Amino acid sequence: MVIDKSILQERVYKIQAELDLRGLVFRPYFWLSDDWFTPEGLTGIAIPFYLAHPRLIRLERNQMGEVVGGSREWCMKILRHEVGHALDHAFDLHKQRRWQRLFGPTSRHYPAGYRPDPYSHRHVHNLEYWYAQAHPDEDFAETFAVWLQPRSQWRRRYRTWPQALEKLEYVDSLMKDLNGVKPRQTTRQRVDSLAQLRKTVGQYYTDKIAAQGCEFPDYYDGILRRHFTVARQSPKPVSAASVLSRVRPSVLRQVSGLVGDQRHQFDQVLRDMAGRCRELRLFAKDPQRQARPEYAVWLTRHAFDSLHRNRRWVQM
Image (cartoon, rainbow, N blue to C red; front, side, top):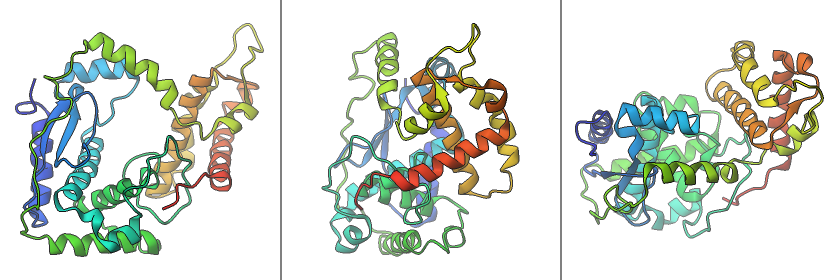
């Protein structure tokens, strides 16, 4: 199984065209593995194998409930992010003083978990979970991804967010300096390539499903446990996850006046809470009342406020 002649080939060509449009001669290399990642110090990017074939995409969705990078838009967002890491490695950008002043030291340990601030205007938004807040390296990669995206109109989009805009202006200036410049270092190493992996597909999903519950963010547990219950209050209890999932389309119609990132984040929090309810095996206390869109809107806004008040900052 290879990237060439798969549905990934067009997306790799597109990311290369975006780099060319910006005058960057750096070109990352790509290989198939069991996840998305850019190994430290390397200038190449691993792409999960399931994206290489429609049948594998369907299998991933059936097993995991979603396909990370499954849509073209989502895949391109992740590719731009990973290219940011690879570019950083190619030019040692993280060693620059201004890079460290804006994003923080890359030597900082990655946290086991982080509680983001959904109201923060210090970071751009590209991937879910406010991922730019996780670590200085991710902050840079997310900023680069927003800068690289064609027609992103980042100056207009972040004009009222001075700290995020300063990072984008820095990346813009930095990339102009790299226009036509060959990388200081390039690599060809492929970590955990498909040929190197010794897992069966069955074992891959057994391990991935077992790890899923451990990895799901616990940002919302306090709120969810207060408003839902683990007790089966009737012979036919209604799961909290099903309540939130069913009402989601109506909720999004109610908040249709929100624009850009706000509406996207609202949707993200609602989906995350439904997923966490499933992990915690929670049930609705009052299914009829809690199935109303107004209740879900209130609960989601409450989750936003709770995150903002009780965040555990990763010092940036």
